[in-house]
Image (cartoon, rainbow, N blue to C red; front, side):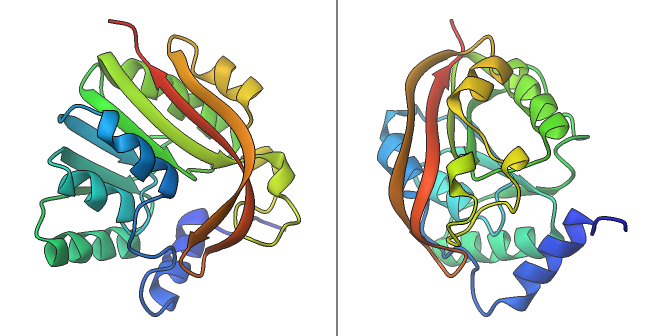
Length: 205
């Protein structure tokens, strides 16, 4: 039996919810760390309905959000307009899209879960795409999230942990690395205690 197309699945989810599936406020982790990011060019990976990209734009960054879905990026543009900020949006498969070489001051990856081969490609591309001194802010679910029923991918292979991230992000210096259980309350899509991994990693000057 063939697997459902991820783009179709997420298009349906974003189109089917009244409002925003994960709310309109940024990730708590991103909000707590963003003050340490100098204003610059920011790329938000798998940005869904744009809550994190719009937040970074509100802080004065030049932000590009990329997601697999047209429905998500349409909502992101709508949210940016409501908040009075500019946001560039791209509808593309991250596993295939060229995010460039040394052209981003920061990359934001919040719950950007992908199959392992795609994730490894994307993370290698992130290392190359960050400018010297650029920073990655990442939060994702760990394998301990499976079965909690509070959000996240359906299989452990699509989650992340510190060991895999250290390997996949080789070339970046980890300034913050933590696995923990925390309350994640972000719209109807994420509600309840979540097993997460958090990373702040910088490309050497």
